[in-house]
Image 1 (cartoon, helix red, strand yellow):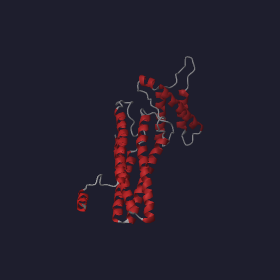
Image 2 (cartoon, rainbow, N blue to C red):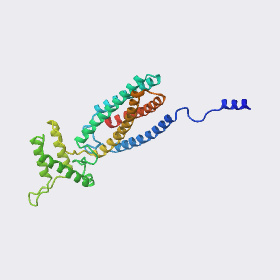
Image 3 (cartoon, rainbow, N blue to C red):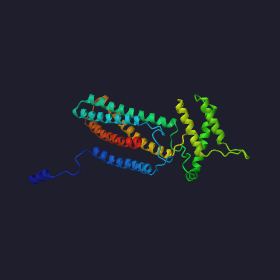
Image 4 (spheres, rainbow, N blue to C red):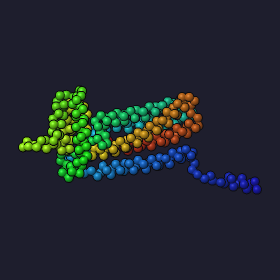
Amino acid sequence: MTAVAEQRRANHTPMGLNMPSGKLCMWIFLVTEVMFFTGMLGAYLILRSGIPNHPVIRWPTAEQVHLSPTLGAINTVILIFSSLSVVLALRAAQRGATGSATWLVGLTLLLGCVFLGVKGVEYRAKWDHDILPGRIGELLPGMGLAREREMHSVGMQYVTRVRRQMERLIAAPGPLSAEIIGGMRQLLADMKDGEAGPSYRSPLTPAQVGQRVNELIHRGEETGQHVPLSPAIPFGNLWASCYFALTGFHALHVLGGLVVFALLFVRGLRGGFGPDQVGQLEITALYWHFVELVWIVLFPVLYLL
């Protein structure tokens, strides 16, 4: 009877996958993340492709929204090198080279922080130029009377916002030149309602205000001045919403990975990597490769198309 039981035990095939449960859970989590980012990217591409190819009504260009493909490319290279460093860290940890593994984890942590720093520089540029959801003017001359009527209420909100911005800048001009301030004064005068009579002149429309504001901003850029007024960019608010949603969620994923890398780095400095830490590093490396691949897709879609 014992021999029969031993034979059955020898022929028994264990059920389940031949991988640690933590790694399996990470794969399942990454599948859900793939669906999440695929949905967001798909929505962005559908919105992007639905914009007509019109001289005025078109998707914002990188120059209009102060988007730098150079910074995006730098961040791509940074993430690629961080992915390489985490692979080398895992290999060193598996060989028992605790010191090398610890400093390679630290290098990965540093590169990830640099990535977020560059992203912060990009976000600062959007903040300085008021390229933020809900703050950009949507109307410009040449878009058609039907669209101006459709977006009149949004246009009037933009006019009110720009009027307040110019009133503050005129009260405290700071480094702005007299030419730019004079242009703001003239624009404010043209935006006011005229008095009844033979010399009556109707106030500027939101589209005309947007064009004049863009001219002031462009004039300031030509003379090396930053004019902090909200620009008018057709579909600018939609672009800003998509940009901050996609890059913001990706940045949160990067931050989550950096927190784990920081914990592993401290653990390596204190006592080296045991079998448990090597397993955690492998799972984190798998997650980090996914973060890198998502950015490799986001970069051409957001910066180059």
